[in-house]
Length: 428
Image (cartoon, rainbow, N blue to C red; front, side, top):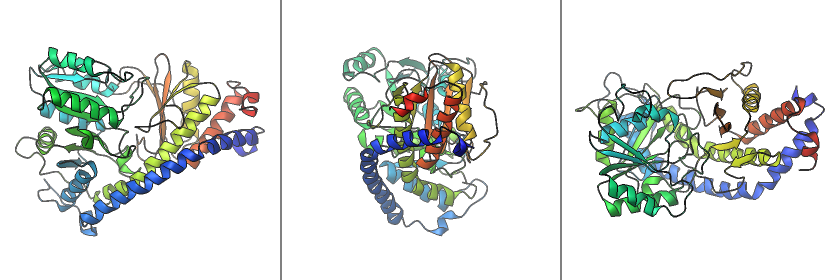
């Protein structure tokens, strides 16, 4: 057991001292949490959410009062004309794909302004896996630029808009599997304002995965036309078992839903399989869970930075998603860290993690994910594509105490394997 390790006291003191250094950041974040939760509580009360909205329908689900109420609550949260929260979305990628296929038509152009999209979107767009009905297969044109690390990006975007008949500008808020800063709402507002000043009809679409409830507002308040994401990430509060959402301009949400279901049914069907209570309760828990994840990310960043690794974002810096990236430059170290975190998990702690192929990903992937909800990045997980420069991406943490325990286990493992220096911990 870690408590019997000769290094336990040294490691515990080291991590506790790092946590103390972040106290002011945590206090500021706690004050913002209160405002976010108060806003959400007001939405629940304004919408008169009751136990009647926990009930389940069957079949097609026309006039399902649970689904309709949940959609209204999410629409208000996002300041959107309309929202669709559906268990039929199997992932955030599925929700994003529904938006893209719903809005874009052959001959039109999709422009990504945040560089390469997340791996699972590459086959959706048609960057690999040809002949499967991707956007490119259907005659939709794709262009990309990367403004992520540029403060002055207006000219770069305008140049592309002048060259193409752009229908949709795609903004991926999180860093994905890239070493770049995540996009914040201030930058989203600059992008959307620029695009709409050039063409008011061009759609600004934000992949909001990992970013919900992190900042003080959501992208639609900053000019985005539509957003999409997953319920096994931030907004599920760690308890929603599946599903995703789209929210934004009413006609765009309708178009996305016509791809999820079919034209003629669209937004007006789909049962939630009796999960209405979990969806609403998960949303109510979400501000607290996101706050814990953000504090956990800062602690992880500070610990890894102090033992000599490059981290992004830096500890105590402004965050717009819950992802913490660490550059390891060593595939063995990636596997050691994922294995240690797996051993610190409440579920499947006994499993050995190994790199393997996964649907939607180009590289072999290694994942530490001993979570109650499979693939839930709100709880505590770490994953990495096994490719240079071997960056690892850590998300979530339903309570910072669990993350602290995991870090104690990890540093003990690394010390035992002589991968870090004991003296380094004593003097940092």
